[in-house]
Image (tube, rainbow, N blue to C red; front, top):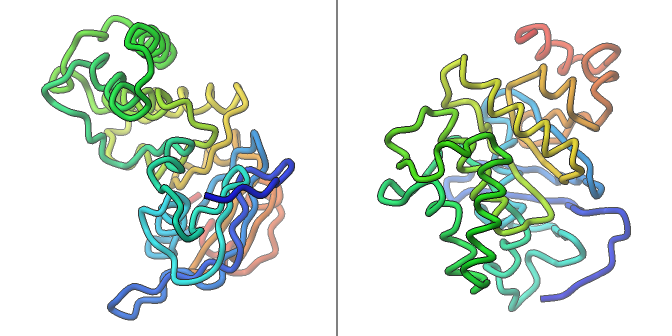
Length: 250
């Protein structure tokens, strides 16, 4: 594991290429930087490479070429301990993937107990604090089958935060939810952003992107075409493909 001081930059991706075995060129020389405490939202049509790029940041997808540094650590350095690197990068998926046989508190406590070997009492108190933080104090000892989709996703966010990451990645976290449950999850994410968490979010929720993002990235066909402020992206962009995309979804 190598560390190279990155200053204000939490994530630095340089010329990232991803080609699947079937020949699909999913990412084409993508370069992007995310500063500490910044909220970056990635938008674009389906199949544009948004989720693929997000997943390369913690090696859920392995790149073919390029470089990715997170908090000064080279995610692809030879001999790196990827599990140790991932401890610093929390991830929330479309599906909740909670353990059905464990309570809300048990789900949130599991990773820090098994991976970090922290003191059990400390882990339990931190789990309780996080469950309060996502608004589920009354569900502490409830099993996932008794929770709504929005509640399960909030537990998944608390579970990711339990590892005390410096970066949170969200891969379309509301896409599997009924419309009335989307707001409760976005509210938790907004609170995280307000607390200064570095976040990279793939989403179709343009209202969230406009309100919360510091910067919006627009991708298509594996390429990063636009990186700009929400105001410029949504109100004054002159990029023809971005204009066309927004005209269909806004």
